Length: 404
Ligand SMILES: Cc1ncc(COP(=O)(O)O)c(C=O)c1O
Image (tube, protein in one colour):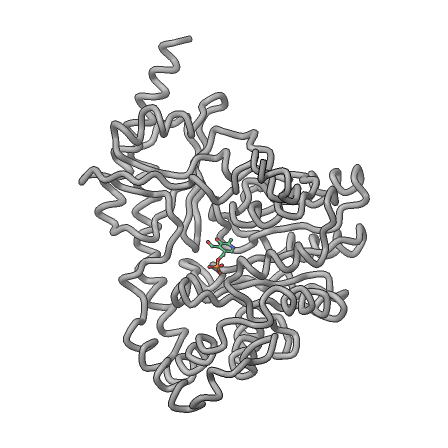
């Protein structure tokens, strides 16, 4: 068997957390709340086309030469200024590494820190892409739940006391994927204090932080970091276009050097042409003005989803009220498996799709939730889809009652 040759990290018995998330429903009435993609009708295609052309005119053949591992200096300086302004993280280009999406940044930190069997904490539910990245390094997961103001720090401290070897904690503090929850400022500071006390590294993954619909973004967890323990990660995927495959991280000291070494070995450097184009875009266009347009659209879509949850869903169901980002999380009564319900009933009959809770838990042991994404749909489609989903959930709960 060929698989005998594979490294244990391939683990053919465990499919990637990223596989099988979306059902392709070709019915004309189908509404998908599943994919967490940005709305492509809002992509600044013409401005980006000009930016590519400007970058080529500006640099000539040199643009297509090997570039530095950390990536375009000018873009890194612009990103340093942005995170200083919006996140209160005062850093310079020297501490920023451009990566192939935020996804590569997560992978590189995991690669730099984890040996097989090492203890890590993930907030649950957790971003599936992070689970897919961590799985490769064969960690021992500890799941810590979320409260309405972010990670449950009491549960975290209990876990840290019981497992003093924990090395790494992964969190999405701003408009969390998949729940839309945002961590309070108090918890951000307290989390760094715990990292200092219990000696672990924090991955602060924040691709949605610019997409706030109610108030300005909060200071980053990284802004409280005095010991170089926090790696801040963000991305151009949600505020420009995902296929630019441009993410970035901020790290300090030895940790930056370790991540840099992983990056150099992985791909030498990547996407230099794209980074030059993004830099030209940011020079000739107002990125913040573009983000304001995005926020105006997504805010209305978010409001339509919350109204749909209020109007069409039964009282036994609870849901989050995101103030930014792309996602809402619905919790069904205990004992209801949202994955089975999707396959047996909701997708074939109501033609609605969502991502069931199970995918967001490292041990796939929680089933009664669903992630709903509103970013790709108009408010009218959201209203229609939520009406049909709400009715389907009501009748499923009614059937369960009838079986008792
Ligand atoms: C929380 C989170 N982190 C990271 C990513 C990776 O995004 P990208 O690699 O496109 O930057 C995503 C994408 O959906 C995400 O939701």
